[in-house]
Length: 251
Image 1 (cartoon, helix red, strand yellow):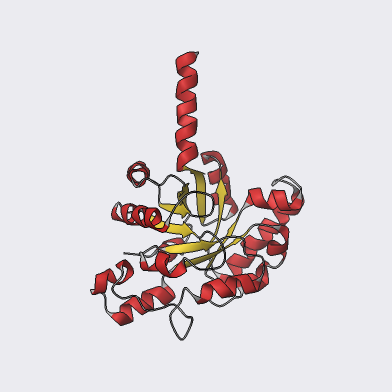
Image 2 (cartoon, rainbow, N blue to C red):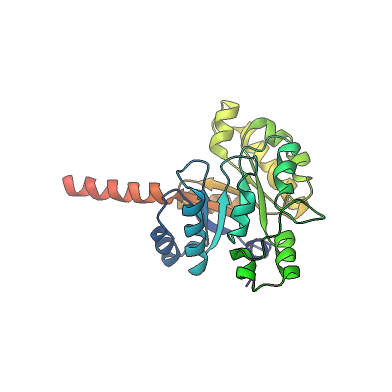
């Protein structure tokens, strides 16, 4: 089975997923059955614990979706446990400098590339059934290690950040960029910063992703050159459907 990185490397590919904020694994079943390609368990802006994230990862992968995790912060304290849970990869939030990425990436790869500890009896090691060489090879070469560039300073330093050994994906948050710049996401200055990031990713042959609110914006992102797009989130999908139903009932 191809890794998420390998899927994103297929020519002309764009994968669509959504953020997972609700802590119930049943949500994974609903998302898988309607055709989402992947999910990102949000430990930064949602009340996920390690255990709830773990349950979502297991459920999503069992149903054929890829499962990423957005870490709570850029410090990397959760990295070892998240990767040993078998997650397909992680997003590191609020990366502003190359040093931020380097410190977190170090804990995602095994020696001599990094300092990740050997956990062969974990789920990522198939509970000890996977050979140690295969476990190490997969951890060092197949795990998605994405940096989130969310403000003007980060995007202006994108070349240095993407040059950090081990970074193999990028993500830009248009909402945070707009907040940082004080300009709408559609402002030419912000558009230029994002276009530069996309070009840097193309030059390095690494996938670049973003987040949008609806299907029309997702298609636009795909056509713009993004390799993976998060569309809304499970909580908002439910809330909007519930609001529309309630409005119809009371009209």
